[in-house]
Length: 393
Image (tube, rainbow, N blue to C red; front, side):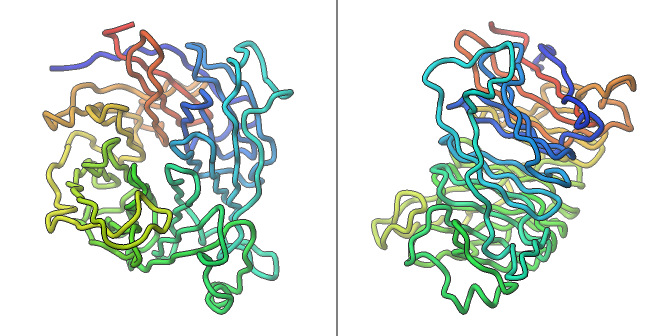
């Protein structure tokens, strides 16, 4: 069985960001917004409440050298963006009391506002940022915790609403690049020995974090209970990994990268009543099946680096995009490709689906009432393309 997708809208970022690629996308269903990060200094906010996806807010001078990752909590109230200059910015939102206008920027009622910067472990007492101290990022469902990978193979966890009990000791903080603690506290640091951390994600219940690395290694960490720890090193991708995502139900983990395939891993947990809550998941230590992290499938079809992937809201489908612009949709039940598409157009130069046009970012869109599932792709020269399934509204 194949699925057909239609292009419903295509656009590019305003100049000068249209001269740079779109590197990362994030969705906040609660505020009906799509957050867009590129090689430009500005973050762009589009409305997802309308099929025209209008630009409703800009966040200028967010990252002077551009932004490579942006992530939003599933609660929709906290976003984190990371820049090439080493900045890790915090953004907060309040869901609007009424729908936002579609016609123009809504600067008088901003949806997203700056809420500080993460400095612990990143900014030294000399006020210098280390861009390698936080690369790929993920935000926990509640918006309280931030997970970030580093260029030297570490996984770090920050508490964005810290109490003194959760913070690392002063001596521990000083041992980490002579850093000082701002509004967020660095609470855990794990060594993976996997090299440059390219992707990271929280499980839906915030009890697990997965990371993928330049070496091809995939690591699974358990955060719940009194002993946060590395749970398992999963079967390797055998080439640099670039993206990793838990399924909506948390039963599967997908990872991909330069090997050109999507690897699926089984994630099965059963919560124990022992232990005490530490803010992750529902509290208590968790008992993990000895087969947790086993590789259960490999989805083959891309003939180039896979740069991004995402799960549909039901977990039935995975969409992935690649360096050569190809987009594939996979059935997680049948473990096969059901659709192949092309990425966003680059102005005046054909499409990013050509062999010289990369797609960097992909996100499934919220399903509007009476509508069908769809996703958005971001790629070269500020290009964005929105798809929806042909069947349905």
